[in-house]
Image (cartoon, rainbow, N blue to C red; front, side, top):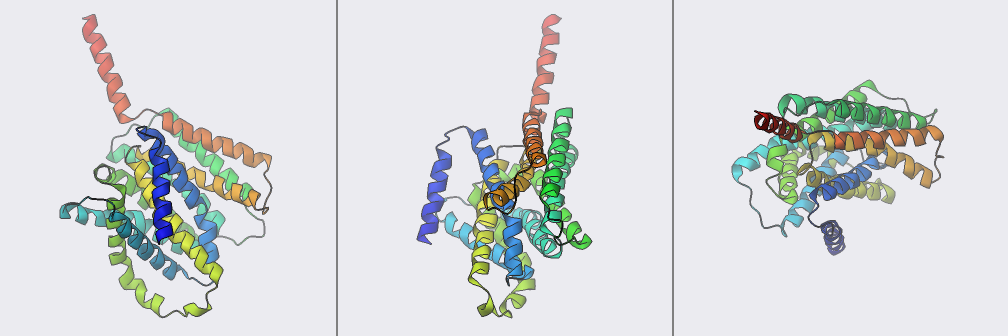
Length: 330
């Protein structure tokens, strides 16, 4: 535990070196979170194949992350009013219960390739929801960026799929897609309140509520399992899912969410398949091909276009400048 706290402090000292450049810190935080999540599908799938079933993995994720966030909150002097604590129950339902937990169950039913393809739908959901709820404009640059990134992600995933791999499952695919819709709703609806509090405070209450929602239905199942037969590698894979695929990822996403628009946050989802391919190449499981290289260019081009697209604030500023210019002419 002491080692965990030391690494935690070191990581955030490194983030703080970026100084007051909040945008840069937000982008690097999101990129780091997507790298952790990019490894979540293969590592989580391996844990489930090695003896940790889906309900148990879901339980370990919420309990482990809740404990880590409560420990981290000892270093954060901040209180959240009970009104906002209650509001965090909705955020927990969308961002954790219906996102990561439903995704974990869906992943156990379908293939990692199918689940990765389905995750590309999230930026599209976020763009549409931000338009209707936050009145964020849907510009041509944003649309082109999302589409280019989506095409690149799908090409990359398909080029990496093994021909003899496990086929998908329609129920698992739908659960993974529902998880993306839930997270897009969370990004859109809870963006204002997330910006008011420390990232640890926000996640502490979200994961506490997740335990309240999930554990009454899963604790009996977890306690009835024979854990002595689970291999050491499965426990290490589960540890990665809890610490990096849940605790660190959610913490870093909120760092980015506090600064950037929901569509920009969501488009970083396209980085996940890039991570999977890079890891496969580095470990000798696959070779890097020309289609994959083109797909990576598409993905990062799409991310760049969405980042550079105009926000609601930019549009308002431009209209004010035009009005002021017309007044000067008069």
